[in-house]
Image 1 (spheres, rainbow, N blue to C red):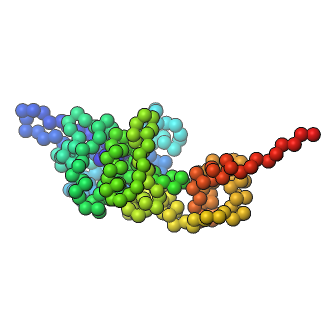
Image 2: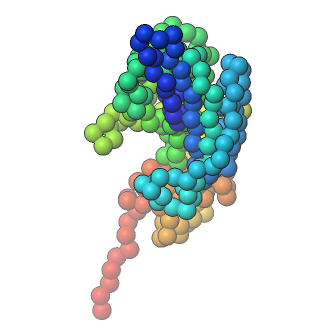
Image 3: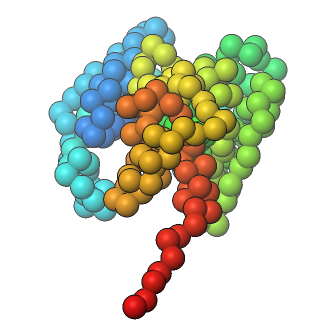
Length: 262
C-alpha cells in the first residue's frame, strides 16, 4: 500500500452511516513477465484477509510513460472495496482523509515495536514495489516522501544504510547487496527480477586480484559497453561479481596509450 498499489478511496460523508472504504489498484509493466507472479502473490495476500482481488483487462501506459515499446501496456489488478483497507490506510499507515502516500510521509511509529519478522515482511512488500538491485552492489528503495522512515526501519534491524537526495528530494535509501540478502529484502516466494539479481551477485565469486583474462575482457567490452553491462557480462559468463564502480575506477586509472606523430 505504500508502494505500487493505487488506493481508490470512497470518503466518509458526515451525517450518514457510510464508512470510508478503499480498493487497491495494481498496474505493473509487461516489461518483466515476473510481474504476473508479483500480482498473483499480492492477490493471495488479499485473499488471506478475506478480500477478493482479480486481474482485469490490461491497460496501456499514459503518453508520458511511453518511452519504449516495453512499456506499451501493463497488467492490471483490482481488489474489492472494503472498510478494512481504509482502516489499514488511515490507522496503520497514518494517512488521513485527503492525503496520499505520494505527497505525505507515513506515520507508523507503532511498527518499531513489532517483531523483526514483521518489519522485514513490511520492507519486502515495499522493496518489491519500489526497490531495485543494481550492479553497483547496492539495493535501493525509492520512497518519496517516506525515505527517512524507511531508513529508520532498516536501522532498527541493525542495517547500515544511506539516504540520498534526488531532484531535490530525500528519496533513495541504499544498503549493500550482502545486507539486503541477510534480511531477505526481496521475497524468495515472488522470485522477482530483483531477487534473482540479488542472489546472483551474492552467490558469485569475489576477486581481490583480477586475472589477466578478466582485465582483457573489461578492456575489450569497455569499447562498446557501459560498466553495468560489463559487470553483468562477467557475472553471467564466469560467475564472478565485480562492482561496476570498481570497473569505472580501473578504466579511469588505466594509462592511455601514447600518441606518436611522424
